[in-house]
Amino acid sequence: MRVKGNKKTKVNIVTLGCSKNLVDSEVLLTQLRGNNIDAVHESKKDDANVVVINTCGFIDNAKQESIDTILRYVDAKEEGLVEKIYVTGCLSQRYKDDLEKEIPLVDAWFGTRDLSRLLKQLNANYKQELIGERILTNPSHFAYLKISEGCDRPCSFCAIPLMRGGHISRPIEELVLEAKNLAKGGTKELLLIAQDSTYYGLDIYKKRNLAELLKNLSDVEGIEWIRLHYAFPAGFPMDALEVMAERSNICNYLDIPLQHGSSEMLKIMRRGITREKTEQLLQTIREKVPGIAIRTTLIAGHPGETEEYFEEMMGFVEQSRFDRLGVFAYSHEENTHSHSLPDTIPAEVKQERVDTIMELQQGISLELNREKIGKTYKVLVDRKEGGSFIGRTESDSPEVDNEVIIKSKNYLRMGDFAQVKITEASDFDLTGIVS
Image 1 (spheres, rainbow, N blue to C red):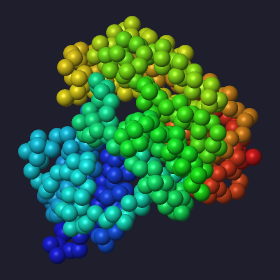
Image 2 (image 1 turned 135 degrees about the vertical axis):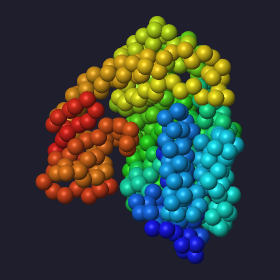
Image 3 (image 1 turned 90 degrees about the vertical axis):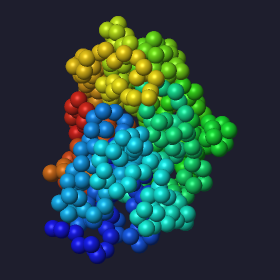
Image 4 (image 1 turned 180 degrees about the horizontal axis):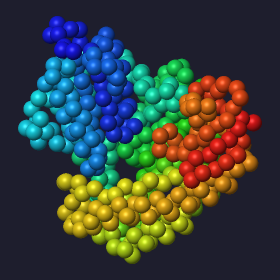
C-alpha cells in the first residue's frame, strides 16, 4: 500500500542493541507523544510513514544487524511504503560520514546526544516538563533506569566512549522523580543501567555516590526490587554493598563485567585491575552481601590471548563459580587501542573458546541450580507461556538470566510476586510450584 503525501505523520521507532538504547527510544517516544505526534515502538503494521532506527555499533554482529535493518527500510521507502527514514544511536554516531555516502536514501543521521535535533527534524520541541516521564515499551512491572551516560574508562577494546562520549551522571533528584513516576504506573522493579554505574556521581558530586543514589531510590514507595547492572570492578564503591545488605528492596544481585581472568590480559585490556585484586573484590562482595548472585561477562580471543592466558581464564571461572556468565568473542574495533594490536586469533578459535567457557559455566550453573531444589523463593511473574507461568527470582535480570517455570492451579497476574518452591533444576532454569 502506497503512502499518500498528505497523510498525517506517524512515527515508528525501531530499537536495536542494549537496554540503554531502549531507554533512549522510550524517551523519544515520550517526547513525540508529548508533542501530539502519533508515535509507536516497533509497530507490526506497515502504517507509519516515518521510521526512526535507533542503532547499535557495539561489535560486528550488532553493526551488521543495524545496517541490515536500515537497508530493509530503504527498500520499503523505494516501494513507497515509507516516506522518511531517520537513523540515530551508536552506529550513526560512529560512522555517520561513511554511512551518508553509502546509504543516501536515509533522510538524516543523528548521534547519541542529538535528541533535540532529531525532535526538531520531526517537527517537535524538546519538552523540559517531560523530564522524569517515560512511556515503557516492555511490561510495566519492570523498567530500566539509566543513571548516567557515557564512559571515561580507557579499556583498550571498547568503542563505547567513541559512540557515547564521556561520563555524565544524572542528578539524584531527577532519578528519584522518574522512579516515582514509574512506580505510579505499576513498576515494581528498577534495573539500574549505565555504561559504568560505579563511576556514578564523580562528575556532579565529586565523589562516587552510588550508595546515596541507592538509598534514595530504595525509599520510593512501590519499588520492591532494585537491581544494579554494569558495575566496573576497579575503584568499586564499597559503601554501595553496605546499602545493598541493609535495604531489603535492593536485590542481592550484581552485574560486574570482569572481561578476563588473567592479570596479563587485564593489563593488555587496560582494565586497571589484576586477577588477584579481582578475587579479593569478589570475596569482599560475597562477605558483605551473603547469598549475592554475581553476573559477569568475559571476552575470548582478545589480541595477545595465548592458550596459557585462556586456560587462566578457565581456571578463574571454575574457581569463582559465577551465578550468571556471558562470553563475547573479541571484535576488532576501529579507533580503539586494541585495534593497533594484531588480531591474529582465527574466528573459529575465538568461537571455540567462547563455547568452552560456556560449557564450563553450564555445569556450574546446573550445580548451583540443583542446590535450590526444595527451597522457596520470591518470584516476580513476567508472563504466561502455554500452561505455565514464567518468572524470575531476585538473582535474575530479564532477558539475560535464568527463569523460573511456575506450575500453579490459580491464575498468576503478570507483575505479581509469588512464593515458589523449587522442584526441578536444569542448566539455566528452575521449575517450581506456588507454595
